[in-house]
Length: 359
Image (tube, rainbow, N blue to C red; front, side, top):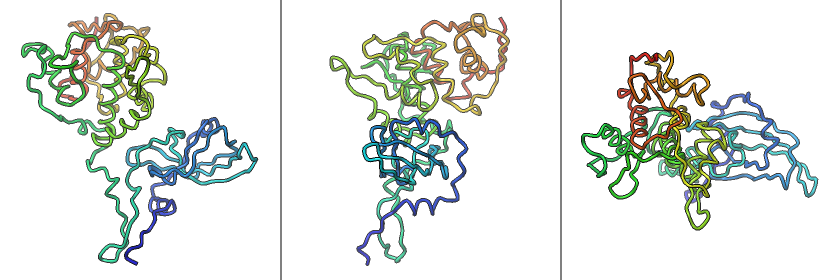
């Protein structure tokens, strides 16, 4: 008997995790409109049970029996789905798991406890072997402690002098592995940050903050595999970070698509747009109010992304370009300024505090 393998099946998962299941109170209307639904054997397993697409089936009824959140905070539904094959009028009823946020996605990384097959151990106890899928790096979801320095700055950039006002910020961004140079020994501190660069930075910070470095990097790779490629004349385009930001709710779907069209030259991001793209990276508890904004010289409630800008001022992430707190919302932002905002975002001790903004 020692050579036999046991197969882990959905019933095992449901039995082991039933104490973590809860009633689903969300709306399932979107599932009825789905053009494709991926059914899984269990949440995060690497085994698809079936893929239904709108060319082959008609959904008759969907009932979410239970809901479950995995270790990465993704919400799954154990559903009873009744559907009819379009080609044969044959009706089938199936109980399976779906990823509620993206029911059409089949690129969700497998994770513990989706174990490999098991065998009898020397002490004759049957044990599941989880090692292949365990996240080795412990992390707390949505924590600044997940964002750590990964390398050392050693005057890597020739255009960042020791007495420049942005030297510490560039050094910080480099050591955290969030902001890179423009090639060779150059950082280009006065260069304009583009829309795509701002969203790439946002995805790097958020994925690490929410999921930890290891799982965050793996999650981003899923998006890279799904969305990146080569466009006209062989130029590489990178939409994955944009799609990640959309999926995680940092920006609205399609909001910046026109600015990152592969046929257009890189579009500089405005200061207001960048605040908007970064303001939801952290949870509210890491954005504590420590300044008072009565009014600003050039920001009113008619200004695009007004509430996002005020939130960044109140949290001390930005402080304006002068003593009055002028923001210049429609101006482009330099790479050095972006590095400074990143530093204030993740190192709370560097933020502005105790200020009152009143023009």
